[in-house]
Image 1: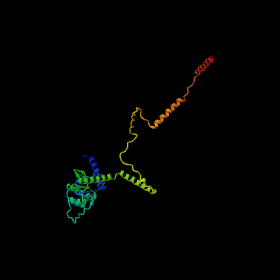
Image 2: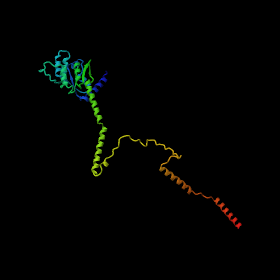
Image 3: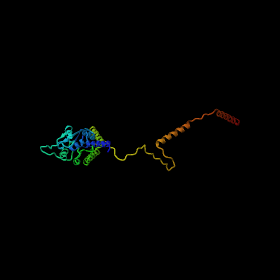
Image 4: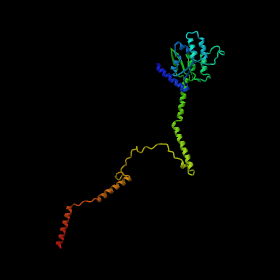
Length: 299
């Protein structure tokens, strides 16, 4: 896997642990004897590489039993440098396995499991990041929910993906949060607030007029159901002709307007006056004089 892609994957994984189990910086990294010995063999700057892998500040820690294991392997090459590094740069984590009570140090499996999960309830109470090279110890700690695991292979520091137990708990928590949001959405709260305000208004009206009927005071709620279409968007129906062969009936307002227009036209025709020309007036006077002469001759 390319380095950039792996780094992005580790960052997302630590974000999931921080959201699900409350991991925060500086991360408490619990280191065993094999891990610190392997890091010194590879000449690795252990603290810096841990910070690059976990994408945050770290606080490396080592148990008393792991230190006793290192002192027991003091004669091996490279172990003395690991002891000096653990003494100077690592915080000592008291596991409670004192040499007076336990002459021989406990195995890494027993010691680390008692520190990570002291009550045996499969929970990483103190939010430890376990940097362990032993496969058996890592397989045991996978059963403890919310435990990030880191190991070294071929001078490369690798972070394991989230264990199945932890992934199931995380998905369960996410589903419960999602259901809680569905039960109480924002819109429902708003409606409840509106109903409360309506009830307060009704109480005020009741106090103002106590003698009136309560049924009249209550506001009529708008019935829920099928809504009518927008009248402006509906196409108007065409009116059919009647059986008498006449056209469509006009509304009363239109009929009244048409009647007034017709009355105005008739009045206009009556009031119109024609102008008499002078030529017509002369001819009529001559005709009247001829008729008068004919009557005189007859007499």
